[in-house]
Amino acid sequence: MMQRIALLIEYDGARYAGWQRQHNGVTVQQRVEEALTKTYGHTCVIHGAGRTDAGVHASGQVAHVQLQEQAHNIPLEKLPLALNTRLPFDIRIREAQHVHDEFHARFSAIWREYIYTITTSDSVFHRHYAWDPELPFSVDRLREAMDVMVGEHDFTAISKHNPSTKSYLCKVDTCSVSSHGSLLHIRIRANRFVYGMCRAIVGVAMSAARGRLGPDDLRELLATKQRQKAPIIVPAHGLNLQAIGYESEIFTQ
Image 1 (cartoon, rainbow, N blue to C red):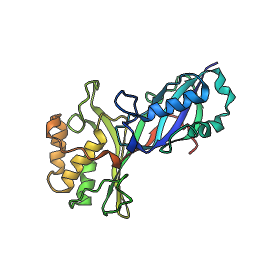
Image 2: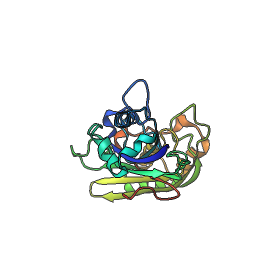
Image 3: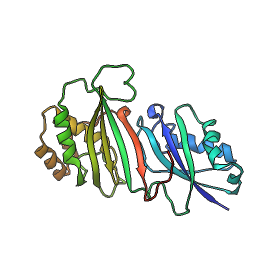
Image 4: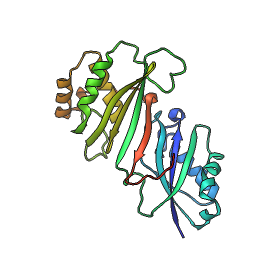
């Protein structure tokens, strides 16, 4: 009898070429699949909820795997420990839960949430997980720019080109800025994200925060759907996949 398991995964993306398996670098998906294969003795393929880019971190990635009958030999509560002993130090399985056969980590998700961290202090302890913009900017203008992104928009102009993307229409529910000492957290929650969208949003918002663009300019940019007019995309190391939402809660953490 087959069984489907959902995994809650966290990782430091610094050493990886992103989440999804590829030929030109080691990925998080590859390492988790290798750990599952060693644990169960048969080839395991996992499906993730979000395809994070190279250098992007995650504290709430979700993936599912279809396991064969011998999976019953390992109690579900012991599975994270069994996998973590076979995983590198920068990837951890936080929790494992049974899910129904129709569950799909990517297609069953109803929202995704990312947090981008900006540091306002030149600290060596922030350098791997927060972006230091170096030049001055206004936090109030940054918040104004984020407000423009809320709602349903075509994000062609504020994303990277991906030939496999058929639609750039995304509904952003939350796009907020909060202060935590010397750190700023930009929280972006949407029903879906297109390639490079989060980092492009932060990039265009930072241009507004430095007075180069106003709210009306941002609205016009979205309306043009012309990617070449968008500002730079900010560094990957400040971005974290925070959480994935489903119709019913899966994990206890």
